[in-house]
Image (cartoon, rainbow, N blue to C red; front, top):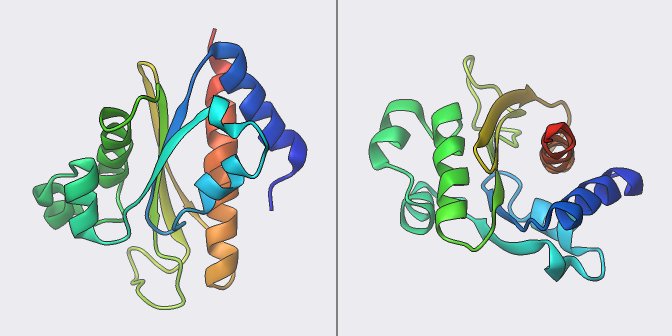
Length: 161
């Protein structure tokens, strides 16, 4: 799944900074939360996770705007930012990450092909969004996306003063 040193790097940063993380996942369907909680003692840094696969769950659980979903779709920079903000607003965490994408093999189009995943990371007053395209079957896309979500959070925490 994820190289042990990468996950350890992330959890060390969270502990060192006294931060807890919340996750808001769509296409990864809880895999990010699973990876974070595979480590004993993860309650020291993992606050909660939201699996919001449907648009309605994004609205109800995370406060994503229906207008955002109508205008940009679930797989968009705007939606993942609202998902991450909603995870912070509905938790006691200080950091959040969000994933929304098209795991495939169907569901994509020319603009957003299967394998497209949007990420958002929020840490204190810093936010980052990024779109990636992953190859492979449904499981491969989800696995790569979950690993990338954690790598991205570690990268942001490493850059904080």
